[in-house]
Length: 309
Ligand code: UT7
Image 1 (tube, rainbow, N blue to C red):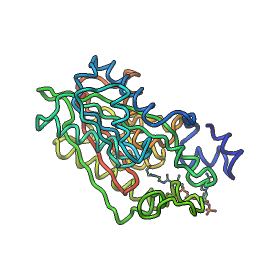
Image 2: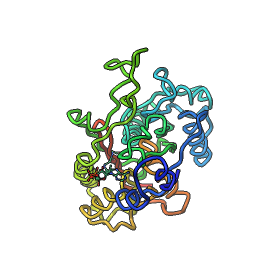
Image 3: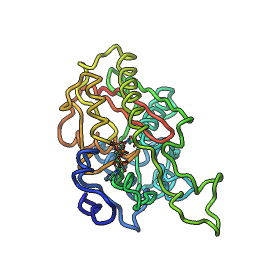
């Protein structure tokens, strides 16, 4: 969907969307495509790149807030479709920070020796929870999936440091009010869009800039590194202005940030792995490079990871 498509359905303009968000297009999955279908494709592509067989995978972690079903996890659906006969599969519900949380869990599983190879995916069909009558949110979101394979290794390369944090007191700044036990969808449900995303964008914006910056500095500090040591930053793609503000505070030029928000919009948990994969396939990442990933989303929840490629 292009900005011109939105000009036809809500009171907005290409000029507003472009200057306020940096978004030009987003990908919208067809009705019959489920989150698991996108996750499956991303997992297959990651395993092919890693020359890894399905039976070698010990765990599959899927970050998503748009599962195929309330029960079971989308990860279990992907496990069956692949199939992954020797894996445990589960979802992580951490909104836009779902992939970074999955990465941190996978790292811990490998470091304590309970897994050798872990698939971590971020997959979302945000179009299924978007209110296309709310111009303040509908222009932002898109669908997609990305995945990585993490593997146990010795030496200096790998996931060097991770940082995770949340603050539930701001949970109503970005939430879906109805559809859970608190407000179930019964036969009297009014379908007043409370089963779709509601967001207080301008307040989130300020916290996002502050906490994404802090999260980046924290993982760098933990590794004894500075911003100068970072080859590429792969940020959550929610708003180009948030990324620019974080870049300025970190004193890292914007050309060391991988940006694809113009083509995908905000894809929540899929955003970081989508950008990472694009950067990698475009040859923008070399062995030994320090890659800094950072994300922020509904919870509120945020996190960062420093990876030496
Ligand atoms: O995924 C992780 C979590 N989410 C985020 O990180 C999102 C963080 N927030 C943002 O990216 C920005 O706050 C938005 C892009 C959501 C909004 O940008 P903003 O500069 O904060 O705009 P605003 O919400 O303060 O709204 C400014 C004006 C309002 O009009 P008035 O009240 O000034 O007359 C809005 O009604 O822009 C209006 N507006 C729009 N106008 C045209 C809001 N959405 C639109 C729209 N088209 N699509």
